[in-house]
Amino acid sequence: MFIYTHLYTIITMLNIPLAITVIFLERRNIGVTWAWLMVLLFLPVVGFAVYLLFGQNLSKQKLYNINRRSRIMMAALIENQRKDFRENHITFTDPAMADYRGMIFMNLSSGYALYSQNNSVDIFTNGTDKFECLFKEIEQARESIHMMYYIVQNDALARRMAEALTRKAKEGVQVRFLYDDIGSYHLPRHFFDELKQAGGQVSAFFPSKIPYLNFRVNYRNHRKLVIIDGVIGYIGGFNIGDEYLGIDQRFGFWRDTHLRLIGNSVQQMQSQFLLDWNLASPYIVTGSEPGMFKEAEACGTVGIQIVSSGPNQTLEQIKNAYIKMINSARKSIYIQTPYFIPDESLLDALKMAVLSGIDVRMMIPSKPDHKMVYLASFSYLGDLMEQGMKCYLYEKGFMHAKTIVVDGNIASVGTANVDIRSFKLNFEVNAVIYDTGTATRLKEIFEADMLDSRELTYEEYKKRPLFQRFKESCTRLLSPIL
Image (cartoon, rainbow, N blue to C red; front, side, top):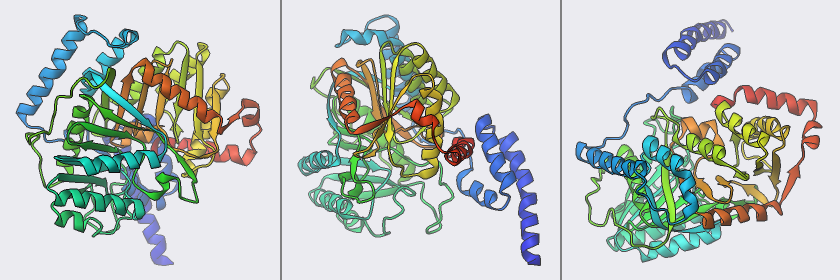
């Protein structure tokens, strides 16, 4: 007992310099700072361990090793397109997109997201269709397959994927597979051995040097990208696992949104994959391999920007894109997200939209996969429902889509949830779509999902049990670090 008392005292004293570090050295957002101070001061022993796992800050440094020639080329491409926008040299394939020049310019300037208009888009809303199409195109690949997923489960779908990639590697196709070390913690160490023996390359993002203990619980690569032969791209919310096929008893039907893209937007996806690959892998790729960046033919007329963000960057590009979309709304804003933990700037933007008479609708799951996050989400919903926002609880299965549609004109589909973790702590990537036809299809998908949802009225929301409200208030205090 004497030993435990002294250990408790020592750890409590260690919390003091740690708290000072949080306040003065890491220079966090004030909400994040107060959240960590509460954890450290009220849970001196547990809080210390939690901070070691979750609280370490990732310096705003240039993680990506980009050579000087590539930097110059990229800067030139960005500046040339910025000049075209300044001088009104851009002709929009969809004339309605001229109203979004400012948004395109912002993403171009802050997120280095080149704008292309020769894209075609296919939308998947269930895992069976998405993966069957993906497996078919893997079999047809001739040059390269680049894949990046946050979660790879140790189950039938993942084994089928590994077998398909192994066959292609044996045929001489260059296969590179990147997975997140924390997201895919169920994977056995030798899961990809056959793929590696066949010539494929596999790497884990920010792995731990200590088995089963990774101190970088934050700052995970939440991106899901596939690039096949440099011309076909997949981006969206589906990971690799049986639950994404809707066959997991816990979740039932898995409702997600994923895109298949063809066009110059795929070059931007390829660039992001290579940046992440070179950061995580010892097998450095220069980008000069034949067919790595192919100029797409005129396969469509959809305007797209691939917007990425990460904790190593000062600006929160995806959050800023969300806010710009919300501020551009004139009629409607439809949002689907499994987690809704906005910061003050995004919450204020949505409030102003509702108060301006915009039809704002939010759809979240009716059942949670992360209880604390779900409780925090409910606390924020009330702020908007009080002003008139409509909220729908998806009941057919689990809602995992990350989609925003504005006025049936523009949309965003990708990996980023509407939460602080996606904005600040994760590496994310979204496709921002400037096309009335595609945005209208996504709006219609939302409206179809409403038939499988229950509207949560504000009157019903106010009748929540007192203990439920207490739990929501507590989790909201910690929302900046959830």
